[in-house]
Length: 81
Image 1: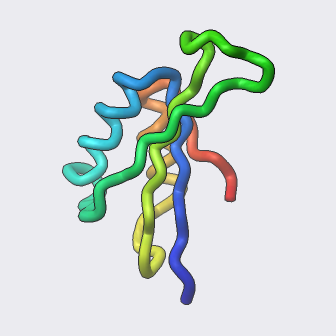
Image 2 (image 1 turned 120 degrees about the vertical axis):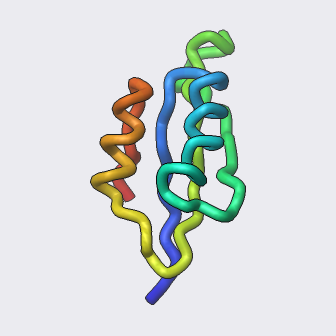
């Protein structure tokens, strides 16, 4: 069984940081999630950037549907693999 990487898309950096810190409490994520700025195509303005929270999931123990619901609480979503 291969490892899975989940990508949560969030509206801004502060929200992404909050989600990243909440992941360990809500889902028991032990590895520090990676935060990545995702500038929208053709946009140079930082205000138009989304932020990605990348969560490694060795052993596929995280529930994708639950992660999607969790991200939605922060006006985000789980990117489809």
